[in-house]
Image 1 (cartoon, one colour):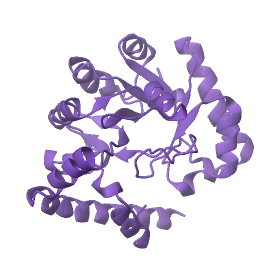
Image 2 (cartoon, helix red, strand yellow):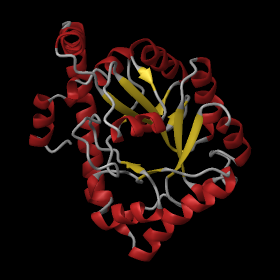
Image 3 (cartoon, one colour):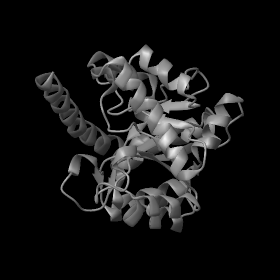
Image 4 (cartoon, helix red, strand yellow):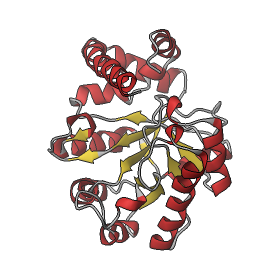
Length: 282
């Protein structure tokens, strides 16, 4: 199992470098600009994406970190080119089949690191941008690198909402049924006790298809969540029917041109989806 995960991590690392090179070619050739113009202006096909961040700031975990400077640039770009909405707005939009007029983006963070409060929150507040942080509940008030109750309650009153990310970040497909149920349900109930608000959304730890099952999805439904998020790449579309395996785009410390390509929707077009499926990089 350990070797398998290392191979998967290596595959995604190689894919990241290939994607960065391809982004360079697509962006500086003008192809992405043309694609976006045709998609928005001619085809009238706006997209909806959910971004997934982890850490914001300069630290020793480059695979899941975005520098504060780059994060500011990314949110500024989103503010100019997208409607930045809350998860409530996004989910309601698709449940009621409202017609889209502009590209939509929702911003999420997994795990609940302290730097989400120290570094990300001031930037989000500056741009009046909503976001959701999925919390590992048993880490609250117990780990100095993670958010504490005071941080959470401050952000709660300022366009930041919270979802559950299990009690201990266990991979749900790798633990027994009873433990999985406790991880899913107790994380919701404990957060509701802290926040005195209903917790509507859940994010699967690791979040690839192999990390959860139909039985796990049913547990999430039965617990009372309204939607759940994976880390599978993709947009949310009018064909999205299962609100318990919603796609997200994982963000890294990209140069801004790579970020622009990543959120343009071009890698989620049919051509690129088929290519990713062919090389098993969905």
